[in-house]
Image 1 (spheres, rainbow, N blue to C red):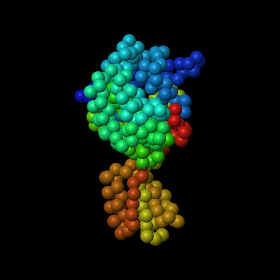
Image 2: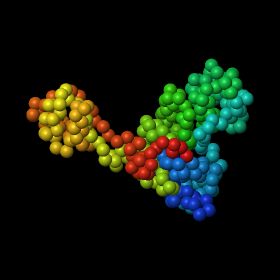
Image 3: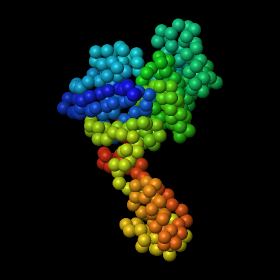
Image 4: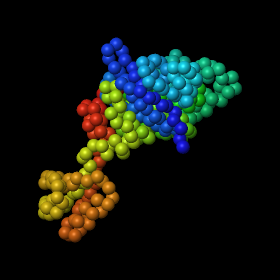
Length: 313
C-alpha cells in the first residue's frame, strides 16, 4: 500500500480578519504528482508556504515526509525541495557554478559534489552550456537549472510552484517530461499551476481550492465527470442524412450548416455502440464521429464560477 508523503488535517491560516485557508484536508500519496488549482487569491501560495515551513499555520495538523511541520521543521526541510515560480539562479555564475554552490551548501564532499553536478548537468541536458553565464540562458534553460539545483539535496518531495510559467510550448513539454522522470524515480511532486492542461497531463490527483476551501478533489477523469456536457458529434454527407438521424436520435441537436448532429451521452463504449447500431438499423450513413467530454477548463468554471485564465497565484 502506498504511503502518504503529505497529510494535512483541518489546515487553517488567517491574516487579520481574512481567512486564507479554511480548514483544508490533504492526502498526497508518495511517488505521485498532486496538483493544486485555484483562482487568484484562492490560497494556493499560502498552502505551499505552510507545507514547506515558510509560514506557520493557525490551526490543524500537517505531516510532510512523516514529520510534523511545527515540531520537526529541520527534518521536513531536509526531506523537501522547493522550486518557485521564478528561477532562483545566480546570473553572474555559470550553470555548473550554480550547481557546485548548492553542493557546497548541502555539505557534499568534493568528489561526491562533482559526481552529483555532472549527473544533473547530463540529466537536464545542460552539459553544453554548463560553463556559460546563466545570464545568457533562455527561460527554459533557467527553469531546468533551477530544478536541477533543487535535486542536489536528493529530496523525497518537491514543491513546484508554477514551474512552466512564461515558457514556450516546447520548453513546457520538456519540463513535463522531467517531472514524469522524477516521479518514475520515486519522488513525490506537489504542483501548483495556472495551466489546466498541465494538471491534466501530469497529475495523478487534482484538488481545486477556492476562497480557502477545497471544492473538489480527484483524478482529472473524476472531476470531468462532475460537469455535464459529454456528447457524441456525428457528421453527415448531406442534409438528408442529418435530418434522418435527428429524427431517429431523440434529444439530439442538429447543425444544418456544419451537417453535424450533437447527441448527449457519457462517451461510454456501450452507449456508443447502441447509437451506431440504431443508425445502422435505419440505414443512415455517418461520415465521421467524435466523442467530446468536458475538459478541466469546464470543470474549473463550474466549480469556481470563474474561468481559469490568469489564476496564477
